[in-house]
Structure formats: structure tokens, C-alpha cells
Length: 83
Image (cartoon, one colour):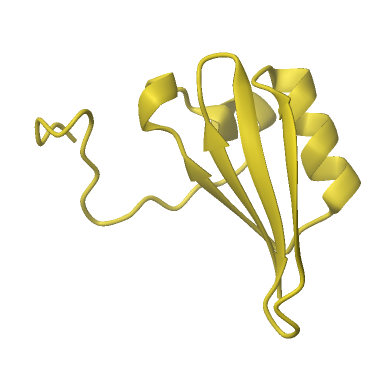
């Protein structure tokens, strides 16, 4: 399985393209914009995308692209327990 992990911040996103079967991985940095994220995801063509988004706020990127998202059972924001 090919996993693209994204750590979003206000201006830039760090991505890790990880191949689970081999452990191969590669890092990249892109602008945190709909186009920057879209182009990265299209270019890497992952089986799954994992997004860490707390410092960028609760932006629903999946809705921007019309994708179905699955959220963890418990999500917190800024350590205050908000869901």
C-alpha cells in the first residue's frame, strides 16, 4: 500500500510518500493551497492519504475535492478536547 502522509501548516505542507511493503519513503514540501495539495496527490497517486491538520485549523480539504473522508473516533483541537 502506498500512503501519502501530509502535515499541514498555515503556509507549507510536509509530505511523506511511504511504500508500506518496502519501507521506501520520500519527503516533499509544497504550498498549503488547494492547487499545491491537489497537484501533489495527483502526482504521487497514493492508495491512501493521511492528513495531520491541527495547526492549519479544521479545513475540510476532502470537501474541497469532493472526497469521502474517514475521521478518527476522537479528534482534538489545540489540546482543548474539542471535536
